[in-house]
Image (cartoon, rainbow, N blue to C red):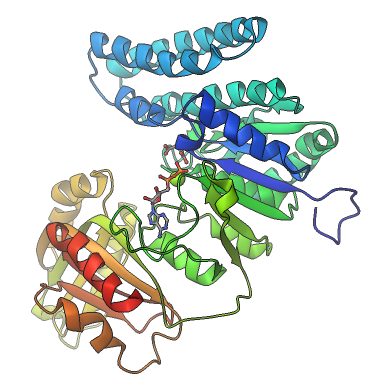
Length: 457
Ligand code: ADP
Ligand code: ASP
Ligand code: MG
């Protein structure tokens, strides 16, 4: 715990992502990481790799019974493949819990196929972490670590915005101090990322990739000294290492820079992860559970170097909406009307550029929901005010760094080598830490590779 707390031990919250808990060997590696330091007392797990994707399918409308059964069998197989490596009595006990959860899941899936609701969708999505956390607690016990399963829904209370629920941070803090902190003296608590519970007792979820955020919220609520995010890469890289093998691991990065990366699409961290960490000044470590000996990235308040160019993030599936009206010329209140319509439909605008009679707005559109809203209701309402054009299939490239608003020559450095690309929109000047632009989806990887070669050669 923080040095200003009277406590005899330091506390690290450790989060393991889906690939880190994908199978027995992966879980065992994670369990050994936990065992290697007595500070590791709270473990937050994601669902085993692939499980949430299966659950997403199950949570959709009109899934045929045969497909439901096939998906549930596949999810079960992932769990039983892990439990078979445990001691027979433990395996038996776990399998009976898993079978009970699978029965509940089948029932929810059946209900959902008959009558869809966002509430049931979240109930379905919440199962993945329920399986992995129960199993991981036992894997810890198999190597003599006092792992104890804890249902995070007791403390992670949220509103009922299913799919993107908002956590009651004050309640989390007091419930953690009351229900969780006392357990940390004797046990290593294993709990679920991604899920919470609303005021009516229904399961909720915090958005895809939300386990990082859960871990950060728990670290804050428990006055943790550290947060460790264990994943499948050896830290935060100068860009997604899947895009270019030239990407290099970053040893140290400031909260602000890492938060910009997460916001602009670096999948390594859920966008909200660093908010609690920054608020409470909790240093964050990011490393690979497969290769812990390789070290990783430290994210903290003060760092030794603040280079002009730190990294490049890429966010796919962006939608650009251009609204145009001669009435905007010298008129006041037009933009307020546009934004009122967007706010009414809970659409959150990312980037904005304006000219005399038109405004371009971008929307993050990962699951197609924005697209559905924009084509149906919103566009019609906007069209009452102005001409509207909607473009899909774009990607947002964000150059992250320091002093980008005041450094000279950065425009040339960034755009010189990609001058054959159609840059659809540029945003620069609002932040010292980023310059972003939109390109066509099919050109995005090439643009990031070229830019990476230019800025980080
Ligand atoms: P987990 O399941 O552990 O949460 P994720 O798949 O959500 O893991 O995040 C890890 C992935 O993030 C990496 O495999 C990598 O492809 C991607 N990624 C995107 N941008 C970066 C970056 N700048 N540095 C490292 N990884 C990145
Ligand atoms: N299991 C959830 C997902 O796949 C949450 C997470 O992994 O962070 O999105
Ligand atoms: Mg993730």
